[in-house]
Structure formats: structure tokens, C-alpha cells
Image (cartoon, rainbow, N blue to C red; front, side, top):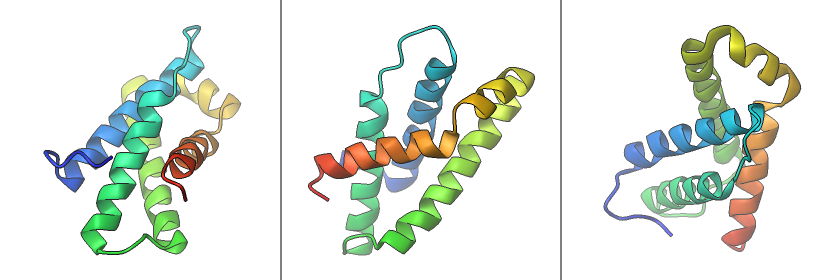
Length: 110
């Protein structure tokens, strides 16, 4: 469900923030709950599709995924420097993002 009160850039920032928090939970001893990340992914890609007036093509999604994953990794490295390196080696950031995307996509009937 797209949250109409938020713009696409706001949804993108929310996606990056929520996914980064989920990823950090994966790297810690806490329980990582992906529900918020699924919702943020779904909301962002719903908004992008509405913005374009069509279903996002898989190639367009691939471009967006690459950019978002790169930005999240850069943000994590800036904020958590050495502590994040071990986690990035242990847990693939892109793989985890794609898991969230696949779950959100399944929820959207895609």
C-alpha cells in the first residue's frame, strides 16, 4: 500500500533507513524482523510504478536496486566504519535486500 502522504523521495529515504536498521539487527545478537523492510520496499516500488504510470520493468528495478544497495552500504560504512566490515563479509547486503524485495513482490502479487 502506497502511503500517499509521503513523496517518492521520502519513501526512498524511509526504505534505506528501515532496511539499514534491519540489516544491522541481522549483524547483532538481536532478533531481526524483516516486516518493516518488506513494507518499505513495497511502498517505495509501488510509488515508483505509480509515478511512472506503469508496472516497473525488471530492468528498471535492477537499476534502482543497485543504486539503493550501494547507498545503504555507503551509509553503513560511514556510520559504523570497521564494525560493519565483518557483517558485510558474513551477510550479503544485496542478497538480503533482494529477499525483502521478493517477499514484498509476492505480497503485491508480482
